[in-house]
Image 1 (cartoon, one colour):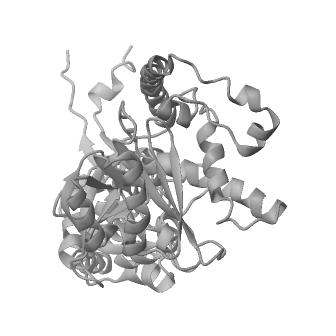
Image 2: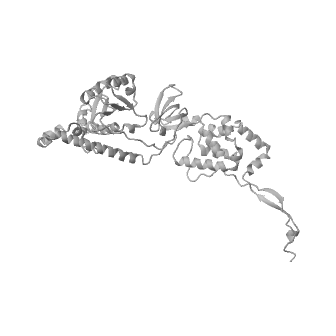
Image 3: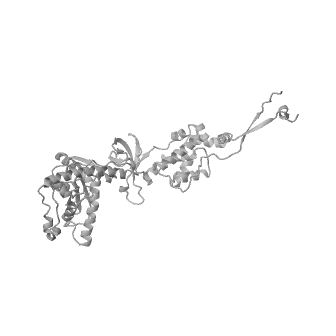
Amino acid sequence: MQHVDFFSRQPVNVLNIQNPRNWAKIAQTADLETQNLIQKLREGQLDATRVFHDDHDHIGIDKTTDLILRHFWFPGIRAFVKKYISHCIVCLAHKKVPRAPNQPIKSWTKPDTPFSVVHVDALGPLTESNSFKYILVVVDPFSKYCILYALYRQDTEELKRVFTNAISLFGTPFTIVCDRARTFESTSYQDWVAGLGSALHFITPEMHRKNGQVERYCRTVLNLLRIEVNNKGASWSDVLWKVQLILNITKQSTTRASPLQLLTGVEGTTPVLRSLVRNVALENCHPNREALMTLRRQRTAELLAANKQKQDNYVNEGRRQPRTFEVGSFAFVNKSSQSTGKLDSGMRGPYKIVRALPHHRYELKLLSGSYGKKTQTAAEHMVPRRGEWTPAVCEAFFSNDDDELTGVNEDQAQGAHEEEEQRGHAEESGNDKVEGKQADEDVQLSGEAVLEISPRPVPSTQ
């Protein structure tokens, strides 16, 4: 059988066809024009990204990449565009970025005695009534007792006038919780509160739920006043006492008792009820009132603690841990409440992070405008600023050509990008939303095979 070992007797050269991942690098190496473009891109002299992004109204990552791919392609193009846009200060300052997921919150630990802590807020401006335009709402978080004061104007002296009345009734509180309105932040008011021996606690801007005790009452007060004004034709300043009475003699769902009952041990009534059912209204004069009030307060403390845990679990169910910022880094802050219109993104900054506060909050210092002004904000409202796009940053992106061209790091970067989007972090101001699965522009196209000719070793003859 001589034909069996024909090839062993007649060795030939075999063509091993390979399709290496770095085919693009091999092809580009042989093209002088391409090499010139790559060198300019590394040195930051090629302004292709600026042309396709800056001169096209700072469109997002997907649209910028699509425009570039019509004329250029190089490995890692999407990661390059993503990095460039993340450094674009115009996008950060003027685009309304998608809001990051709400961060977990921690409820206040409720005091076990009335009026040791009070929550206050100014409601208004309202339609002028007997020269009054505002309402100061004071709420005791233990008994839920509220006090409503009509204000002529929202300034420090007027605030002192009405708050002194509350102190004369229930004593000086240990802590006063309020927002960062100018009236409360004024030096005169802070000095006055310090002279009382009370501590003033400011809630973080844009975090109104931290002062939820009084915010919830503000909504209820407005609803009751709308009924009195619009349905009954009354002046709101004349019926403010009635609204306060109704709120304080009705049972609270959390404490299962009326605020007045927890505070004084008696059940109050309105003039209408007293005139109609006088005997029933007077039946609550119990000889063991003090003992019953003590028992009610003990039960209230237990109910408040249980409700705190329940509310924390419910509210934080869909919340996620926010991004962590380093002290000394820079960021923009999404202050939508300060937006002046549809064309105002609400982004303010840049700010420098000067101090980290508890519960994912930070103290910031403004670097432009009112230079040196300090404020506080939560991490969920912050967008990091990565600095200016410079030739050095551009060169650093291509510092490891081998890794970029193998495509391994590209896949990892793409996977990290998709995972980051799923977490809801809106760090890129220009990331446009697209439907369906995004085609990977960075995947190397199928090109011509590179032929490597290697002689097959001659087998030994038997």
